[in-house]
Image 1 (spheres, rainbow, N blue to C red):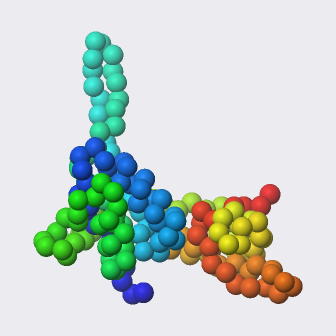
Image 2 (cartoon, rainbow, N blue to C red; image 1 turned 90 degrees about the vertical axis):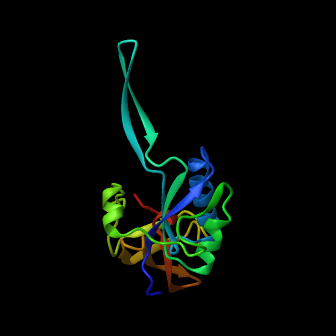
Length: 173
């Protein structure tokens, strides 16, 4: 797939931003869409309020009624996001969502969460979810951008190469 993931703005019912984020994340997990929909964010900023001489720091949504989704735009990913409960549509003319430019993304302070993973090639990992749950794999390749690990799993006496999302594996002691 040559299409790169871009940030899109999704309009939601006011007050549903976090529900939309949670629903989308659940759908991504259930349908294994990690390679199409990479990140969902509700941008927040800290606000300091003084009340009765006490300083209180609260998190406020920067763009109420909007959720930012980093995704590869396909018919499937569009359908999944568009039909998530609480979503009223993508921001863009007509039915064609327009991705944010890199400058807009920078201005909004959206940071692609740096991937910190304490694993290296050759190491053994335990698979904690999916069809190979409870198996052990030997890491062959780590792709930080796609958040994927390729590992050899010994099944029925032979090693089979399989691919896992970072959240499907854990480091073995």
